[in-house]
Amino acid sequence: MTSERRTALYEEHLALHARMVPFGGFSMPVQYTGILKEHDAVRHRAGLFDLSHMGQFILEGNDVAAWADGLTINEVATMKPFQARYNIFCNAEGGAHDDVIFYRLPDRWLLVVNASNADKMWAHLNAHRSGDVRLRSLHGEAALIAIQGPSAVAMLQKHVDIDLSAIKYYFCAEAKVDGVPVTLARTGYTGEDGFELFLPGEKAAPIWRALLAAHASDGLIPCGLGARDVLRLEAGMPLYGHEMTEEITPVQAGLTWALKLAKPEFIGKDALAKQLDGDLYPRIVGLKMAGRIGAREGYPVFAGNARVGEIRSGSIAPAVGNANIATALVAKNAATIGTNLQVEVRGERHNALVVAMPFYKRQKAERKGDR
Image 1 (spheres, helix red, strand yellow):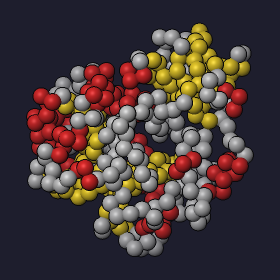
Image 2 (image 1 turned 90 degrees about the vertical axis):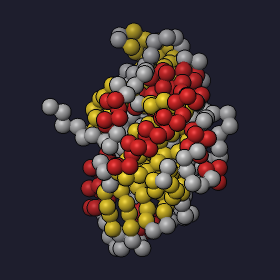
Image 3 (image 1 turned 135 degrees about the vertical axis):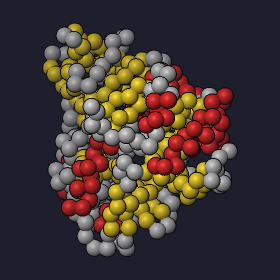
Image 4 (image 1 turned 45 degrees about the vertical axis):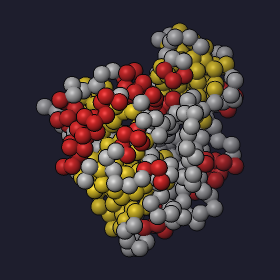
């Protein structure tokens, strides 16, 4: 008997013949009609994702911004109303506790954390709570639906009571979708435009069904976590547990753009400052395999006869000419773009080239703005 929790859309997934797998403590759809078909829909039309396994926490009180600034590497207090911002909680050594997104709403803050880290982050927040800060967990109760792809905004516009074109990338709004109050954000994890809808769990299924019914003829299809992983890897977006861990720091992961050392003290600040000054390695790099052999997590990476690192993520990349791409954590002498390396796959070594990330970027990308 399974011990995984179920999202509010679990029965919808079964009705759509999804292949379900355990992920982050939940039974989640890894695919419906196939990872490549779902990937193609998101890159060229639109895909619909159930992300309700993600941890959602409500933060309230006059001291939330200052308190959160003491726990994270990016700025929280400077966020504008209805702004979203990527951030990272670190440990004292600079390792990543989790990477998250803060959403600043009129009377509260919404914090979204990785599903696999939800319990850890809830304990972390409560252990460090101080001042006028109140915490409420919606994990497993609230729903999160993402619609992503070039046609996603136009599709969603037909269901909402506000002008979606007025919402910039990494901003959010409170609106109604088919009459249901939701918080919708122009954020995502695919490298495409789109929105994420935060709503009560009991309202999720009608919205899910309505979107699919209205836009199936336009190419909207349900997509699973398998396609999402390929999409995020092509877009060069880190996945916790792979490109970032309690041991792999934001400096090593190439996320120094989010590191604001001008802030007052925060957990991990001293360690991260030293890592920047000391030119810390190994670091995460992008690899493109020379042939048809794919690199997968844990495979060793070599420069000549010397082992210089290991693969952290890998996949075939339909948006990159069906090349096999990967991220790897490698030593300094192996981290320069253009360096030729070898990946050991089942005892045989295969050539790979260090390349710039992201591997894929949509042509008409919106400005990232003040993340």
